Amino acid sequence: MRSRAIIVSGPWFIWINLLFCLFILGRHYFTPIPQVAIITQLFPELEMVMGLILALASSAIFIVRMAHDQYAEWLSKFLHGTLVCISALWVCCFYILLASGDSRIVFPFAALLIFTALISLYFDGRILLSFSLPIWLVVLVCNFVYPSELTILNAVLYVLLACLFESGRRMLRGWFILAIRREQENSELIKQLEIQANHDPLTGLANRRSFHLLLNKAMQRNEQCNQSVSLIMLDVDYFKKYNDYYGHQKGDECLVKIAKCLEGATRSTQDIATRFGGEEFIMLLPDATEPQAIEVAKRIQKNIQALAIPHAASPVAPYVTISLGITCLTPATTATRFIGQADTALYKAKDAGRNQWQTYSH
Image (cartoon, rainbow, N blue to C red; front, side, top):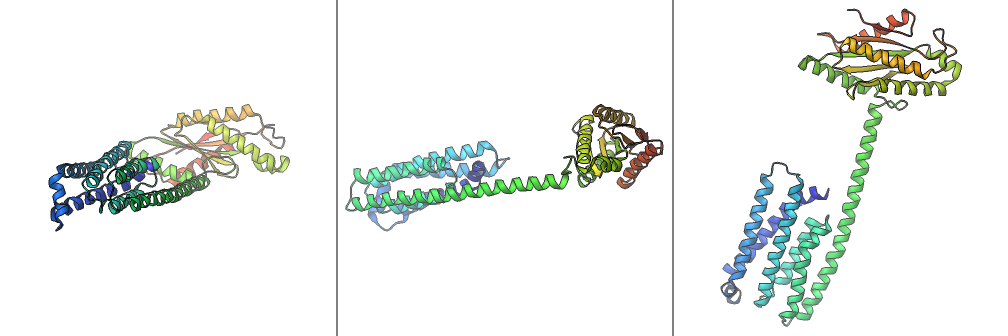
């Protein structure tokens, strides 16, 4: 977040530095005051320092604008280094101004520069202090090394400036941290809402809404890449009798165990197990032919048989069993018809005595 913040506000602050630099150069060239105009002649280093700030600031703005990835990590490091260099050049500038006796502009100009840095860089105390602290120190020290009639007053003003700067930094940093926390809380809330919107709360599997979205994507890939898609619809045999005999809590526990069996039978992360409704489940198998779907169905049956969940009320077996219907996508088949084919195959398995799988006959 801090890296992105400096990439956003850093160029603006560099523009401010560039404008301040042009102001100082213009002041020395166009001022009617002879004492100010002669400083450039006596101290040519000032003009050289301003030229370096102009070149550095202009180059930094150009590089940032031309960067392919505006949020690359190297950009934030580059801007930090640029600001440290500009700060060092401002230190030289203020030293020359104070050494030359032109102290009237130093305090207001340094204050403007420091508070502009506070507005732009408050989110990262390391960058903010690396820019502002050298400027504040050189102005304070030079105030005593090159005394004037306002030495004591200027010292008090510099101390007051430091107090205002630090209090402002802490206040803005507190707001920044609060904003980050709220953004993180909102992100977590959005993630939780997405999970609730796309997953079944009991089993943790994808829900019906999520299944339809994933099915549409799989069918689009089928049209574009000619990839096969298969469905397995399954139903727990005589689940109502299971609930009546063992109770709804045991029924929920049974559904959770079956959901884990479905997840364990998948071939890869592309296979999606879904709770379609009640005791009915459906598996989406992208890039799966009918024989591959049959192998998955056999694996599901084997996993559930290994659980051996007692079902004393079942006419089929003394343990929980399932019936499965398998279908493979054919050209010009809609999503609704595709699901209907899997449902037809499922009822075919039920009519044949349950506890088995059947395929859809086209």
